[in-house]
Amino acid sequence: MIKTVIIEDEMHSREFLKNLLQEFHPELIVAGTAEDVQAAVQLINREKPRIIFLDIEMQTGTGFDVLEQIENYPCDVIFTTAYDHYAIKAIKFSAVDYLLKPIDIEELNKAIEKVLEKNKPLSEHTSIEMLLRNLKNIKSGNPTITLATSDGLEFVPVKNIIRLEAAGAYTTFYLMDGKKIMVSKNLKEYENLLEGHEFMRVHNSHVINLHEVKKFIKSDGGYIIMNDDSQVVLSPKKRDEFLKGMNG
Image 1 (cartoon, helix red, strand yellow):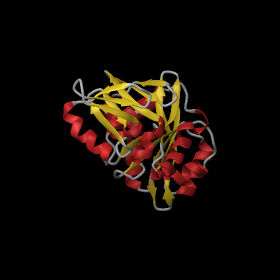
Image 2: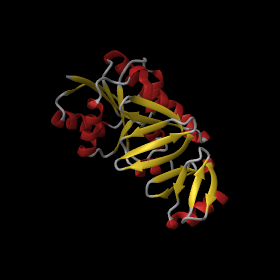
Image 3: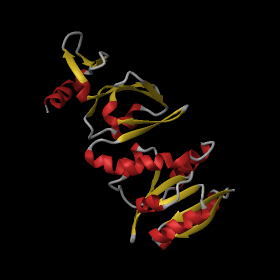
């Protein structure tokens, strides 16, 4: 049995999620619920659950206030929120799961399956620490993206990414230090995540960091040379957008 707790300030939402877990995930035992920050901290520190369902906005504060106050031990957090919260991008950058309310059972199942696929929870709050850091860094425009690889997690400052290249359902990140990181997510997902951080999709297979462009070559249909001297094909449909982005 896997111990979990629910932190949610609305009674209806709290009971709804509890009922969903009891009906569809009997392997999860709800050890308790809490409706405010102080009660949540006490509950989590006492029960030390494997999974925390954590509301972002509560009357007495936020779910992030809870995370900053609980003891540092291995656990997984699944956030819940009633709307597209300002912190969603920080949550995505940090590879932490979240659910939009009203909670959809299929999305709930996916989030739980993803957590249970891990051999063990992330030690020392690794992703949570990165999330709390990214909440501050998103505003400064310098977030760190968490990349899940076959070996574990890689934490990469967004500004250190030169480009991304698609290979089917996989994406390879090319970094300033020459390192390559392959992850099992498609390029579209990262295109959306990096929007607003001076990245552009210039071809079906390529997303580039505009700050890392060295040259644009008009011949041979047009291609881009990056600061690491790699060449990236520029789609004719993207040419005007690319030139505008470079001049902007």
